[in-house]
Image (cartoon, rainbow, N blue to C red):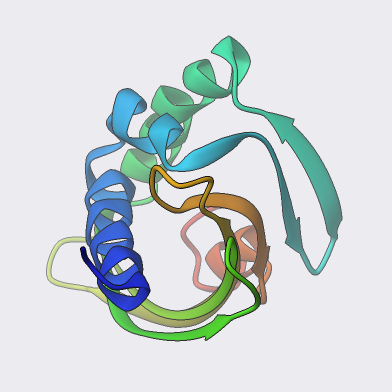
Length: 143
């Protein structure tokens, strides 16, 4: 049987794939049926439903307009909270190139609270510690 740490590592390998591919089935499989997301501007409760599925291609289109190239997990620091919940602080690197030969690199942290009902971890809540849109505005990626 694989260890909890192995499950978490495999989860974030797949999560990174979803962040780069915007594969609707993959991305939706990584979240609980209802989850919460937060950033410096507040908290949202999201249903993992058809509306969420429809938002994924919209996010892809938005990211393509900003010159998105890739997202990479640089590191994961996990804390087991109990038998079903794990907190994982993930260090990300994102690369954008809106103008050719002018890459923009961003590093940031997101803290995930993962729930594992026995079939593998899923995101139940995440906190993006930076305001993604503000960072993009400051870098000139969006108006």
